[in-house]
Image 1 (tube, rainbow, N blue to C red):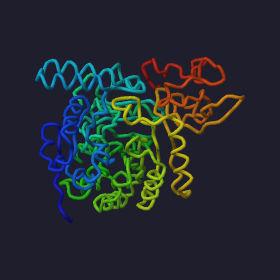
Image 2: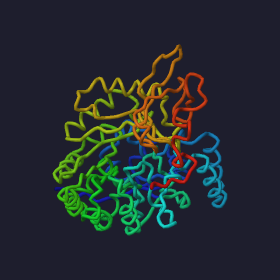
Image 3: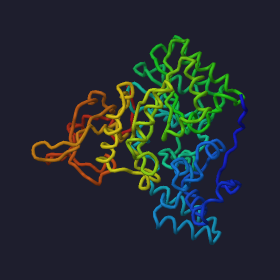
Image 4: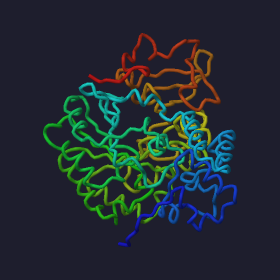
Length: 443
């Protein structure tokens, strides 16, 4: 097997890329200007094997990883460029921080999902839904390349006051011992698989003992298959990572690899196909998810092709998300009506084995809200919605209605239908003290 050594390109050394000679001076300038606000990092696999440089700057993988001018407002772009031209480092740092705070760096009330144990806030964890705890290993707070749409961009931007990260394995394990209704632990980031195998083992292996019989599923959310499949092929501890996966499945736990694929080209290389095969041979199941993104995959044919290829390789299509209201969302967002039409047109062009996918789904403050459709009821055009997940699990799968808005791109832009002042879950304090304005504590 050919060895592939990892090499990254960040803001300091991206000009080393011969491929960027195809860009205009203005396009190269944009990488530098926007990259000072939103994090930029790519690698040799993305650059050499995924991007079609004959189609740059409109190539979807180029847009997925390289900053473009339109990802900042004209006002913000001009302010950053002015300070860069002046070489005013202090002013630039202050202005960049100011702009970042205006880009909604922690959407959907994430700060309210931080759990508490013995009076200590666990800032490397989130516990929004009863059955599932998210854990952010501090050693996995980077990615092999950064997505330009990423809703966790503050993790990579030096905004430490907004960062989720924790390395105290004992606190994770203590919390899980006390919360026996938790069945699923999701390791996320960043990308937890940028961490070495021995680090991940320290977090995961204790969960395989009898003390944690209530933990049924270990989930790992990762873009590694899309951006660096050699993690499972030629990295020094690639075999060790696969042996860890085997330990999980042999212990009777379900290992769910939550793979992020945003475009079919990410499934096309020999390396990713070999990596998928190796992971599946451990007994793990790979589920796939992606946001719907203008300029990347806002085409039902792209989604249908992606789901079909995923099933061909033994993967389970899982989620189509709506891009979260943060960072460069204005560049990527798709109106909700169009998102629903893209989903249903793709959905009806695949067989039943692809129809495990759910969407379009918005991970909003009260929960995951799915757009079921657009309908006319009582003489009013409405969005039909439901919770796939909710802070209050009793509210899951109850249909509710929002007034139709052709321009809306996110849940917070919607208002209740039929002249109601509140959505049903907002009445009678149905979210209880787990509401969007309360610190989140599961008993």
